[in-house]
Length: 207
Image (cartoon, rainbow, N blue to C red; front, side, top):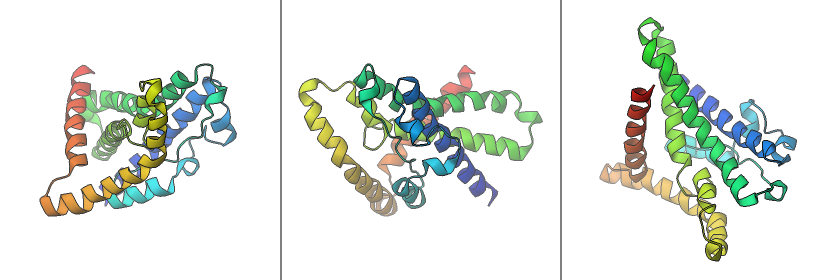
């Protein structure tokens, strides 16, 4: 029961920081759209997304409401849009690195419940960093990848961004409700799990 509460709280904290950082970076780069929409906020209610929350309950991973961005405000639209997209996952990675310090050096004097909670937040932050870097809409990785797509493929890629969300949602449901129970294998979980183990090891070795 306590682990479930910690998991939900960790998700709320990580997703809220993630989405708020998108809004902050967009505003710093010249786009006030997210600020006007009230997204520069640490209030979790400002960042809830219906489909992302539904996926959270169905497949135990989800996302927040996409931060509104108007690239016409940016001096360098393509670059600045990619930087705005990168801000969210980067905040997750930075949070994980920061939390690794007390977990590594003060574990013996830390109350067990606090250690468990901070470990949960760190793990959730790392998982969401990896998940959001996947190049599928509406995830941030798809917008970061757009920066590297050659001009001649931009129209095709824009079509992918507009329609890919449905296909990705179908893939996630197929992966969790058909592959996992029938074949005891999940493509998504296996990929994220491998990267997660590597990153967590590197972070704790490096701090």
